[in-house]
Image: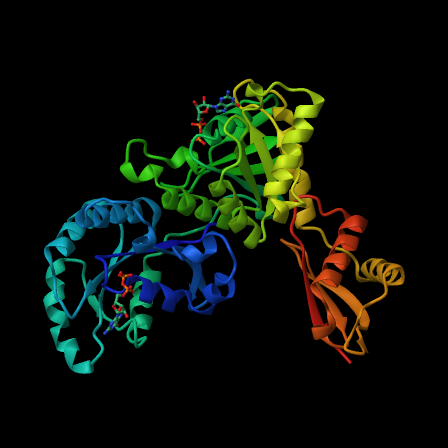
Length: 436
Ligand code: GDP
Ligand code: GDP
């Protein structure tokens, strides 16, 4: 199901990123030390009173060398395009400025729900000044202090009130949600069109989806899919469309809702750094993955060229060694029929459950083949393993001491599990827990 999206807008230094970090809480620090886009901290899941939502810090969307006022305005436009509810942040120490009024005008016109937060109200006596902010015309202004964590609860109560109804009108359990991500011009729109025009594909509109979500439902060979279309949502001509951060933001938003993520690579221009960043996020998010090499019509295709390209992809995307690679052309439709089966396989593996006894047979065989290591005179003992989650599959291995599980042994076990059960197209997770 789609989660509501909340964006924080406001001038520089009003405290957007401080509030963002507060609301996102610990979750961000867990993923923070990983390489890739997760460090950029512009998009993260958050939660209030058991309601989950995704939060965008528009201040983190770097729009290049534009003058400040232009940037603030563009960030507000992005918030209007992307969010269900907007937190408009002011600086209570400085009062209302011209730039604030500019942003206010845009927000007004958009008709999006706006909740006004007046930040840096660190002392209770400052709260008397809150009344002047009614003049902004966004209803009750909420005095908050990001650095002290004050008033955020009341603000969030108000935000949650404006969440739209998120019910997807489809049977979640047997529908595969997938998205296509990749740099501008890799062919995302073309590929969506090519998929929808394939033989025996039945396309239907989805009732009740929100205005800005471009989801398309399709049925092929009795299987239900929903394409979460990021490219199709683009409003051509806006300056920020081409910025890297913005395209990443779009990708993150789609990844959040996907079972399977198709990372598109342009065979003509080759692999770029940005491709890896985006793929890295999908991997970190634990989604099933298929690598799609598009524009294969531009390459002289021999058996060898495919192998060569594949080894290039493998070298660049080592962390995606489980993802199948599909070569196709959205333009000529060549090999396009190989795509949905790959998506389906990845999705099945993503949701696969292994019975405990079967899993333990495989683990015990693995130990027999490659005995557990001894570190500082102590031998690792593996008692048993069990699968604790799906999407992606996660396994807990109970051991005498988790400190003794060296990375290389963990990797070995993971490989053995993969060898035995396939898991093509999905990351899997392995945790060691202590058990005497
Ligand atoms: P952004 O540019 O809007 O993302 O603002 P930041 O979150 O980077 O904050 C700008 C500055 O304001 C930083 O020095 C923060 O420490 C400070 N700041 C943020 N929230 C508060 C607050 O509630 N009270 C005070 N006094 N300072 C704050
Ligand atoms: P997006 O920005 O990722 O949505 O990319 P588009 O679908 O708009 O495609 C960008 C350009 O690449 C367009 O000019 C397409 O015609 C072209 N293109 C897309 N797929 C293919 C393909 O398979 N082969 C070739 N030769 N060109 C393609």
